[in-house]
Amino acid sequence: MTSIILRTSTRYMFPPLIVFSVYLLLRGHHFPGGGFVGGLFAGSAFALYALSFSVADARRALRLDPRDITAVGLAIALLSGIPPLFSNHAFLTGTWWEVPLPLGGVLDVGTPLIFDIGVYFVVLGVLLTVVFALGEEK
View 1 (tube, rainbow, N blue to C red):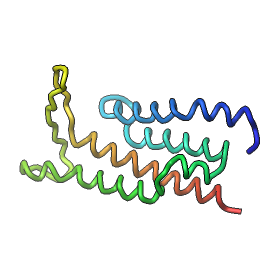
View 2 (cartoon, one colour; view 1 turned 60 degrees about the vertical axis):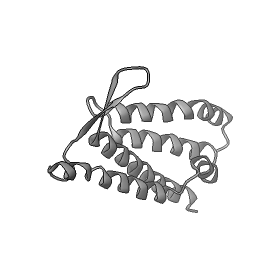
View 3 (cartoon, rainbow, N blue to C red; view 1 turned 45 degrees about the horizontal axis):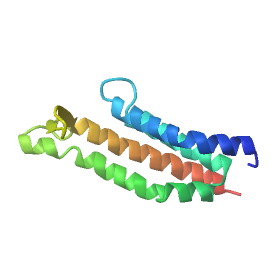
């Protein structure tokens, strides 16, 4: 596409869209959102980038092959089910740890968040694989 307005607005909107997708990912365990919605939002940001510039430019901005992102996401999601096995719980049972923060306080990190991160990468990778394939089709 050759619209200067679309290209300029995409340049300014791309970073906030990616940050908002991460916000949706991290917020999703207790409120609406999560890995699936965050991955869709990040994928739509890259799809907008591919539409505004080109698929080749979007691939350069991504820096990784979307299929590799999908594989990493699947591995993260599967690995999130292993820690409960060490405490005699079923695979993929939620397990939480208290991580002390450097400035004081405690952060609760759990396997549901790790699973959501894996889902985020799977959705992002699959969506971008489809969008890039459709964009390169002639």
